[in-house]
Picture 1 (cartoon, one colour):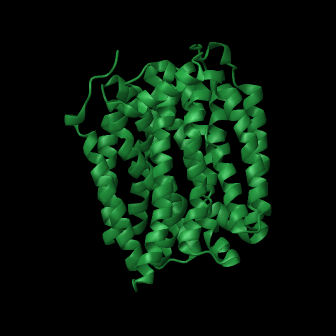
Picture 2 (cartoon, helix red, strand yellow):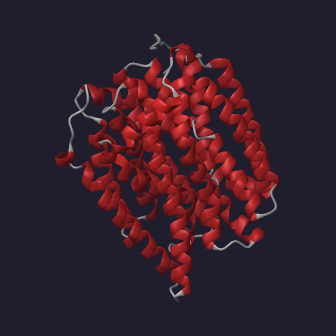
Length: 407
């Protein structure tokens, strides 16, 4: 059911969603900055560090199918509010954990807890905002995530000497509980107007989505562009900057801040101009085609160390803003009432890709270093492999793979 929305909708609808996604992205990327502390305290290998960090993506990804069904049936207020309570519990558990297993379970609970933060917002926007505003609203919500990523870089690094990484997670637990309360108190409850499919019908519709050409066209790019970027941003960017570029932790955190400022700038640009572009006939898939081509060029520059570090990482962040358009591009092939199921199907590919890339890079590094490769050389080989996967996943986005949309 679509509601008329005015300026008050920003306080009642947009801000609770924005804070949820802000927290989700902060938790997604915070391990990049605390990774040296975790490695030093727990003696983790690269593979173990990658596995620990990627449990967030694994739990998040596995939650996408049930979250999509729940959002379509119960609405974003109930689903996102309840899950953010789990986020608070997971952050508290992470703060007190003493072992790799305990940390991994806590991070998986965090991943489950924030699994509806973006999809809940997109579902809400589809319900309460007109179609021509979807790209802009998606850009603005993703900008909130970029602010979370910004907070997880240099600001968190500056806090570590005072509260430590455990103190950071206690603070996060309190913030998550507060956002959950705001969502319950502020968002409209649209459960009465939501889908009434049975569980069997909902699961069959999910299977049809995964088998459809409209979904498959975007699955690979979601896995390796969106997921690959998340793996770099949330963990491997800092080891790259420290090992390949020779920066210390503070310098690497500063470059991570530059990356996240770039992402913020890109998302705000889409937010400000998305409606105008939609009226001009520019579709989400067109933004993806241009942005992913630019990402490949910039990543080659980073790999070959061509150009200023800060410029390259800023551009990578800015161009990554088009990742968000995959949800809109894929959902255009399906009826609106299954929007959450389609967008969570795309999100599942992104987070499975992030898990595979994040853990896979760690395993690859251990194997290469075990075979005598230096750290910088091993990172370069692993990064080149990611670029190759991204280039292959770009091909289905070409116009020759265009499919007729469903009416």
